[in-house]
Image (cartoon, rainbow, N blue to C red; front, top):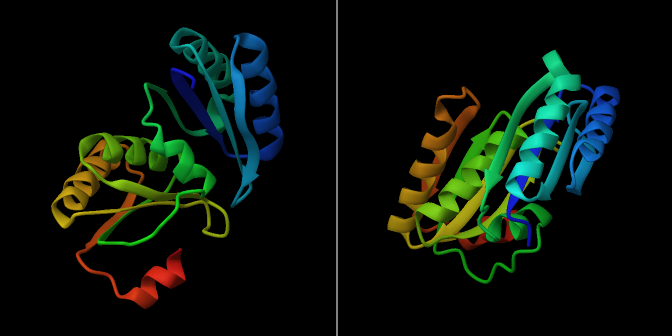
Length: 182
């Protein structure tokens, strides 16, 4: 697994493609994600050694300039984040449900990583801006105390950026809600 990931979220698709090309040419990084998202944004995620990822993100920002919506470089990302991003988490039971809603893809991933590192929770999904007007949602499950601590930590990590929309903890969600969500 890569030691770091970096992401740039761009306002438009054509500039996003240019940013992706620039990032890949700037450093020895692996392309993890390069795709358009709602509402007409573009997201580029790369992985590799911390220095290479930092260099790629810096170069991408240089050509993206005023089109950059949000960004990050995360060294030592929690491994559960990748599974939650791909929607491959096997959900057997939801003891309690925690949700963090964000205005950006980057801030949702930061919130998910922070939450997973803060308490013993299972990340269920990191849903990225598709069909949600550009918003992103992180969901997690576990014991209510752990979920509360994780939601608090993840929300706090993005609160100052202005991208936090809302947060929620449901101690014992109804079974029908579990079936509807996952």
